[in-house]
Image (tube, rainbow, N blue to C red; front, side):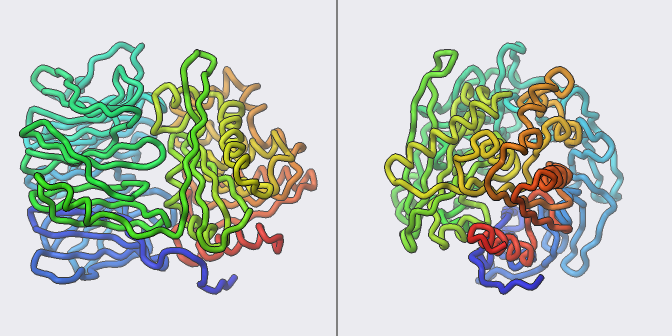
Length: 583
């Protein structure tokens, strides 16, 4: 199938960046027409230099010196994370796959990483001597998925343990044993979102331990005392980036609508906000001179801002970071209510409207995860395409979404077919009351695809059409076929196929096919390791048996995300033809 390359996707989109202060070198990875291009820029170079390109997705980059880089690459969406070396001349596969969370020690003599290769359920962690390439297992995961996360100058290691969808703990390795950084009974469910060493004996962290919203804290590793540094009302502190001089660090926050950025001074224990107009901040780095901010613009393109800063005059930096006028109008709506436990909650909705080509056409986008948030839609490849076609886009944070309170996150557990669907409909109705749009097209990806299917099967007259991208249709098989390290978490927030079989069957779209009465488009990558493609194949087969109006698109060389340029063109063309009833 030949498709003219005329659809609205960024010609070059930043996917990764890495700053090596020791080498005084910046590395950036751009995705351009299906290729991932690695650029390098040293302090004496005026422009970036292309040093490498590949069709495989670059997951991690570890520079050793100006002539040697280690890379982790993923081919064809398989998420097999293979380790390579690159000496500026030859890319060499090192025979190691399933490499996650790779780190280098301070002297760059050892690499550490966690892997599913030998422990599909809980991860094992390895060290590699980079002089003789001897590999050694240093930790075996048991009970729950456990992976390496941080490393200090003394080679003391921090591990993360993921107990369920809303509980992630951090541990410090001492004399071969893992000791929890926060001592808590099982009654206290909490998550550590990020953690960084600021000295050999201290860490900073973002956590919602004994709090509805995550805050910034500090732990002294000698006595494990947790001290709160910053709490912001109804804001969740998420990403941390310490400076090498140990005197300052960046932290970002989110409220479900937009992210904010702050600079914290460890000498005075004060902080100031840095103004950016990125709805999503995806990466941070701070040196003794520059701040680097990687984020999504409203139009979906990812860019990197690098600015020199003055700690005592943030206003100058704020002026530099002000965004240009957008071609998209944003509106925010919040509906407050009290749930069954008498806890106040709110449904947050974003409405994206095109300034040009405005119309009454509307799409309800349902985010995946489910513990993601609605603002992340701005990074999807079809976002700008739909805006250019005149569509208004409604995105709601349904219960179970992240970036709100802990209670809001937990209230979604095993309540997707009722609570989440109610929130999505409520969010749309709030907007519809004011704007009177046409009958909506419901669209979702991953778990958002599942919710899109559930919505149209439960309320057949609510929408005009539906687009499901890589969504599960049979919850029982989905949990059984899921990656082993996901299984306990899926049981926690979806249900147990053994003890809750009847409910899961009832909540599965494949058992509700007879109720569907609108056109449906199914899209899936055949290499998808997260939601197996048979979830879509089985649903399509059942729909056709019952003579329902269903269309499908499968990509043989894609996984859960669609990367290749030619496939993205087909993807966008198919969506347009389905919407315009030309399929």
